[in-house]
Amino acid sequence: MVLDITKDNLLKFRAVKSFRLPENEVSPITSLSYDDHGQYLLTSSASDNMHLYDAVGCRFLNTIASKKYGCHSAKFTHAQNECVYSSTMKSFDIRHLNLETNQYLRYFTGHGALVSDIQVSPLNDTFLSASYDESVRLWDLRISKSQAIVPSLVPSCIAYDPSGLVFALGNPENNELGLYNLKQLKNGPFLVINVKPGFTQWNKLEFSNDGKYLLLGSSAGRQLILDAFDGSQLFELTGTKSFPLREFMDSGSACFTPDGRFTLGTDYDGKIAIWSHYDSISNKTLKPQGYITAAPNSCPRTIAFNPKYASFVTADENVDFYVIEEK
Image (tube, rainbow, N blue to C red; front, side, top):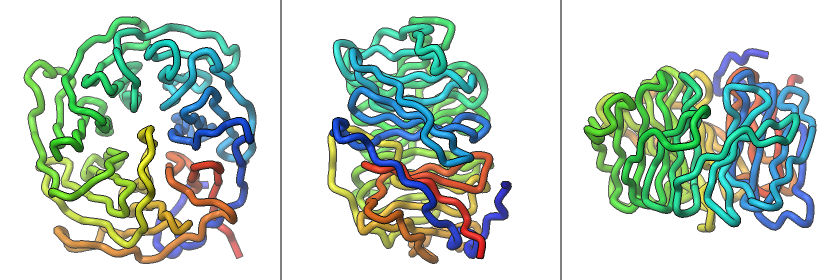
């Protein structure tokens, strides 16, 4: 179902299915990935399992084990039955996996420390990885060796713009965001954005689908929305309680709706905030226009909106699916 996104419709969302991690998985879920068609959801945690769900029917489908290598930041490629994910044990390789056959298609070697984030290009079969070895690398799914290396402070956040020609790199250590032209990486960032001091616990960069906005997410109870063209701060989103710090960077405590007009954000008090910025005056602090009640016995930390259907998912120790409740 395609959603006409309004505040009233967003307030109708309710948690309809919850799935709890098995007792032997001690690590909470840190990454959420929808396939291009919005039909499947892939989750991973800083442990040794990934989980595949039917995102339309809100059903658990399968567990994909990576007991020898561990797994983190699992992301679908453009092939619906394939993913890439980072190893957490024995090596820091990135692995390209066929989810149906459980066969590895390729290994990507080069990082010298844990990979904190992977982002797949919306344009082609390339992807970016950010690592604690102080680098961001560009890869091609067909080649095991990285195609380019960009120096970076750690930890860092990365995101492609909708065209796939530009990416953003966020360095919370020096409160800077850089925008890079993928065809001119050797020239460094073409725009450097200085983020306001005191904005901490970065865990997400996301461009809106129209390319106008850049969301800088944080688990500290605040989010920033920047102008994606000149880097100016448009809005600061407040009104949520911060989460405790933890070891692994996750998929982010906020996300845009597919039309880019609203932002949803998780709250340590167990609710999901709704901010409307499309009709707001820029350079303002925005409070939530309402809250969606989280699933019972859940404290959602990460959130992602389905790119094709009227649904979204939150996760921490549970995976919770939300759809519109029609009365």
